[in-house]
Image: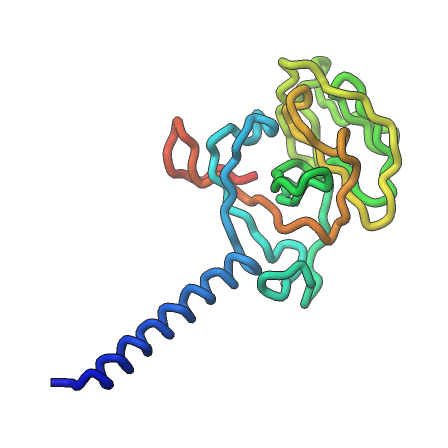
Length: 201
């Protein structure tokens, strides 16, 4: 039978392997992919409270694990992307839609968006907007929220919720540095009413 020293060495090896595995998983979550729990209805009807969303953290670049330092640049944040970032106001992690990028002139009236002089609504009611050819159904049941008229600064983006009357977003805390975007939400993989599935965003 193995002696106490051999048993201790084996336990130490197993702990080391487990520790490395945990660090590897956390590093992958930090740089490759993660999930996000949607806490509110601020992104209705695209996202519902309780949704679980898969987030691609490689969408805009590969980062040094556990930091915000980019190792390799990748795609650019674009209008219509649903993204994860920390609120500049209080640091709370948020999920919102990018509605404008650097240099864009933005107008919000009654919850309706105009970018560079073009209104995004595709119908008379204004409850559907088009982002890069993709239709987004808004929730305007609680009104449109505060108005806005601004130009987005260099290396900045503007993030607003689809539930325009119930979203604490860029109309309140301003723009976000593009390099502060953690990743792009790519799909809902769990919805309370439906269970597990795959709803692309």
